Image 1 (cartoon, helix red, strand yellow):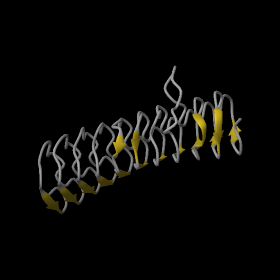
Image 2 (cartoon, rainbow, N blue to C red):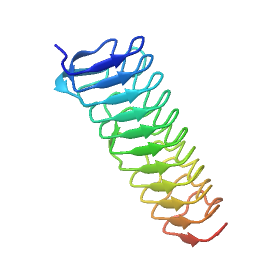
Image 3 (cartoon, one colour):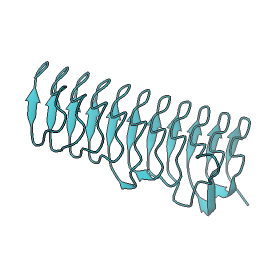
Image 4 (tube, rainbow, N blue to C red):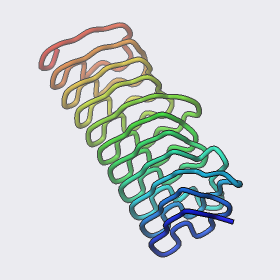
Length: 193
């Protein structure tokens, strides 16, 4: 059976089977977690935090995740080593790993499987990214409309906001490379650079 778990709230860990070391606080938090006999060490706090997509059960690879906020990591099935703090942070993540998303809708649409190692700090940071990897984004709306870029660094409010594809860019400053949509290997420093 399940051991060393804490569940507080209607349907929190409601379908849990054979898991351990897990904490779920809030309505439907970790509702569909299934550790298949393993300690999962997930922590979910908030309405539907890590609840799992309707009709599915979180798989054996869903472990070492921390989510705080309503709908944070709500669709997680097999992601691991992720941190999501804020309403809808990493909301639609299904199987990616080693991401940190802090802020409302930070990395909300990210889905890619594997080790993506993205860092997004700020409301709407990397919001629409779906398969990006190794990005470091700090600032509200920074790289907000990214789709699949990799190895980018965007620091500042709306930095690289319109960037959709491309990689190895560095933008530092409010609105730096904001209008760029597909550049590669660019460096911009300063306001609106």
